[in-house]
Structures are given as structure tokens and as C-alpha cells.
Length: 251
Image (cartoon, rainbow, N blue to C red):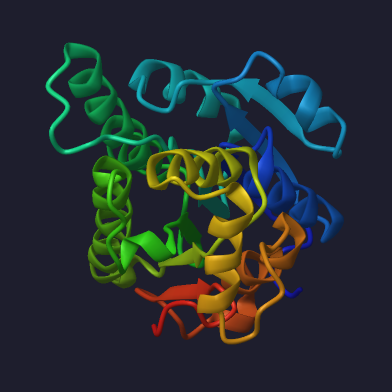
């Protein structure tokens, strides 16, 4: 796609799932990709798809600054790092409160930290693509912290689009529906256990809610949305959240 070949890209949360799929698609399109993940396997996972990888905690400003220091210019930033766990509203355990804060720290503050450091290396024509979720438009019991974080991602996307537009930088988001990843399967299992239903019944309910059907998407099913928003094909689009969910949520 125009504007991707030769571009310098930074993507977070890229060692598995959606992030890995998007990173691989960007490499295949000719981009030079730096993949950041808080995973000891980050360098190896990135090398396997032709990218450069570093283990970085996006909530650590000093670590983020050090990781970006050698990159020079950044043309495209994909904020994909995220944590999805249950956070029941009535759980008062100290570890539950700590988990609630950690989810918001990674999914919201971490995204802001990486963006702040990347902007010093991004000029006119820069593109930022954030990973939101269909749960950034709807509510899901038991997942309060995650749902709140994804609503925040959509809000930040709109805010940054207005703030950075005068600098010629576009900011958009992709809101995936149910994609077959480690995180989504874990969530399906949690929902099944909590509701007394089977995992298959949970997946069946997802299928029933989709206009197109087909069950859970695979990461490769949604990478095109990221490439579109990162390319010049979307040159007049900013502040938008593109839902990729087979019609499950009316955007």
C-alpha cells in the first residue's frame, strides 16, 4: 500500500496475536518494523517475521525512551500493547485493585507514554493507529477495567486527532471484535466458567451476534484495516475508529 513501503514503523505488543499479525503484514508490505513487547521472547518473535524486536514495558518512560533512541524518524506508530483480565466490581482484594490499575496503566497510560516519546520523531504525514475493541463501544460484565480502558483509547484517538491534525499527523483506531488470540480464548473460558455455560456456547453466542457469522476471526482477518489506516489510502481520515467485528456492534 502507498506510504508503507520504506516507512519506519514502531508497534507495541507485537510478540503474539493481533500485534504479531499486524507487524508481519507491515514487514510484508515493505516497512522497516521495530516491535516492542514486554516479553522475553520479543527479539526472537520479531526476527521470525523480519522485524527488529525489543523487550520493553510500555509503562516505563525511561525504557520506552531508550528503545526509541536509535530509531531516528518514525513514520507510523501502532499502539497495540494491552492486558485483558476480569476485574469484578465487588472484588476488594488488594491484588484485584492492583490488577485494575495495571490494566489501565498498560492500556491507557502506556499508550500515552509511547505516543509522547514517538511524537518527537514524527513529522507531517505521520500516522498513529491505536488498538481499541468492540468493548470500547459496549459494556461487558466482569471486565470493567478492560472496557474502561478501551473506551479511553477511543477518546484519546479523537483527542489526539484534533490536537495533532495541525501538525499533519493522523490518528485513528481499529476496534477488533472476537479474534482468536490467547487473550480472547482466556476471556471466553472465564465467561463460560462464570455463567455455567461451555466455551462452545460462549463462541456460539458470539457467532449469533455477528451479521456475517463465521465464528472467531483470525489475526490475519483484521490486518488489512491497520494497513489501510497506516497507508496513504486513508489520507483524509483521522479521529475515526474502524470496527472489524463482522457486524457484531453497530458503529
